[in-house]
Image (spheres, rainbow, N blue to C red):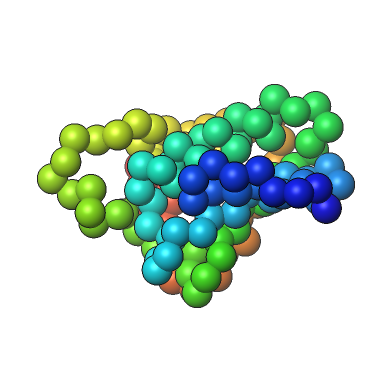
Length: 111
Protein backbone atom coordinates (compact mmCIF):
# COMPACT_ATOMS: atom_id res chain seq x y z
CA UNK A 1 0.00 0.00 0.00
CA UNK A 2 1.22 3.48 -0.88
CA UNK A 3 0.65 6.22 1.75
CA UNK A 4 -2.54 8.27 1.64
CA UNK A 5 -3.06 11.44 -0.34
CA UNK A 6 -5.59 13.72 1.36
CA UNK A 7 -8.02 16.20 -0.21
CA UNK A 8 -10.25 17.46 2.62
CA UNK A 9 -12.66 14.71 3.67
CA UNK A 10 -11.44 12.52 0.77
CA UNK A 11 -8.18 10.60 0.87
CA UNK A 12 -6.70 8.09 -1.53
CA UNK A 13 -4.53 5.03 -1.05
CA UNK A 14 -2.80 2.93 -3.68
CA UNK A 15 -2.97 -0.82 -3.37
CA UNK A 16 -0.73 -2.01 -6.21
CA UNK A 17 -2.56 -0.83 -9.35
CA UNK A 18 -5.86 0.01 -7.59
CA UNK A 19 -6.67 3.49 -6.33
CA UNK A 20 -8.87 3.37 -3.23
CA UNK A 21 -10.85 6.59 -2.73
CA UNK A 22 -12.02 6.97 0.88
CA UNK A 23 -14.53 9.43 2.33
CA UNK A 24 -14.37 10.35 6.00
CA UNK A 25 -17.09 12.94 6.53
CA UNK A 26 -18.88 12.03 9.79
CA UNK A 27 -21.47 11.38 10.87
CA UNK A 28 -23.05 10.08 7.64
CA UNK A 29 -20.56 10.89 4.85
CA UNK A 30 -22.90 13.57 3.51
CA UNK A 31 -22.23 14.56 -0.09
CA UNK A 32 -21.27 18.17 0.57
CA UNK A 33 -19.16 20.37 -1.69
CA UNK A 34 -15.81 19.33 -0.19
CA UNK A 35 -16.69 15.64 -0.65
CA UNK A 36 -17.84 16.16 -4.26
CA UNK A 37 -14.72 18.20 -5.04
CA UNK A 38 -12.48 15.54 -3.47
CA UNK A 39 -14.22 12.76 -5.39
CA UNK A 40 -13.84 14.71 -8.63
CA UNK A 41 -10.11 15.25 -8.01
CA UNK A 42 -9.50 11.61 -7.02
CA UNK A 43 -11.37 10.21 -10.04
CA UNK A 44 -9.42 12.54 -12.35
CA UNK A 45 -6.16 11.41 -10.73
CA UNK A 46 -7.09 7.75 -11.20
CA UNK A 47 -8.15 8.18 -14.82
CA UNK A 48 -5.02 10.18 -15.70
CA UNK A 49 -2.57 7.80 -13.99
CA UNK A 50 -1.57 5.08 -16.47
CA UNK A 51 -0.40 2.83 -13.63
CA UNK A 52 -3.93 2.71 -12.13
CA UNK A 53 -6.15 0.00 -13.61
CA UNK A 54 -9.21 0.31 -11.34
CA UNK A 55 -10.69 2.43 -8.55
CA UNK A 56 -12.69 1.61 -5.43
CA UNK A 57 -14.81 4.18 -3.62
CA UNK A 58 -15.49 3.47 0.05
CA UNK A 59 -16.38 5.36 3.19
CA UNK A 60 -15.07 5.25 6.74
CA UNK A 61 -17.59 5.16 9.55
CA UNK A 62 -20.96 3.49 9.86
CA UNK A 63 -22.41 4.37 6.47
CA UNK A 64 -21.66 4.91 2.80
CA UNK A 65 -22.77 8.27 1.35
CA UNK A 66 -26.17 8.71 2.99
CA UNK A 67 -27.43 11.86 1.27
CA UNK A 68 -27.02 15.59 0.83
CA UNK A 69 -25.28 17.89 3.29
CA UNK A 70 -28.22 19.69 4.92
CA UNK A 71 -25.96 22.58 5.97
CA UNK A 72 -25.83 23.52 2.27
CA UNK A 73 -29.62 23.74 1.83
CA UNK A 74 -30.77 27.20 0.75
CA UNK A 75 -27.25 28.23 -0.27
CA UNK A 76 -25.82 28.72 -3.74
CA UNK A 77 -24.74 25.45 -5.35
CA UNK A 78 -21.00 24.80 -5.24
CA UNK A 79 -19.67 22.80 -8.18
CA UNK A 80 -19.32 20.06 -9.00
CA UNK A 81 -22.86 18.89 -8.49
CA UNK A 82 -23.46 15.24 -7.66
CA UNK A 83 -24.76 14.42 -11.17
CA UNK A 84 -21.47 15.73 -12.60
CA UNK A 85 -19.46 13.46 -10.30
CA UNK A 86 -21.69 10.46 -11.08
CA UNK A 87 -21.33 11.13 -14.83
CA UNK A 88 -17.54 11.29 -14.42
CA UNK A 89 -17.52 7.92 -12.64
CA UNK A 90 -19.77 6.35 -15.29
CA UNK A 91 -17.59 7.74 -18.11
CA UNK A 92 -14.35 6.50 -16.57
CA UNK A 93 -12.20 4.43 -18.90
CA UNK A 94 -11.30 2.32 -15.87
CA UNK A 95 -13.62 0.24 -13.69
CA UNK A 96 -14.91 2.04 -10.59
CA UNK A 97 -16.38 -0.10 -7.80
CA UNK A 98 -18.37 1.23 -4.84
CA UNK A 99 -17.85 -0.66 -1.59
CA UNK A 100 -21.26 0.15 -0.10
CA UNK A 101 -22.19 -0.44 3.54
CA UNK A 102 -24.83 0.91 5.94
CA UNK A 103 -27.33 3.47 4.68
CA UNK A 104 -26.54 4.51 1.12
CA UNK A 105 -27.94 7.17 -1.21
CA UNK A 106 -28.95 5.85 -4.61
CA UNK A 107 -26.89 7.24 -7.48
CA UNK A 108 -30.01 6.97 -9.66
CA UNK A 109 -31.77 9.41 -7.32
CA UNK A 110 -28.98 11.93 -7.93
CA UNK A 111 -29.85 12.35 -11.59
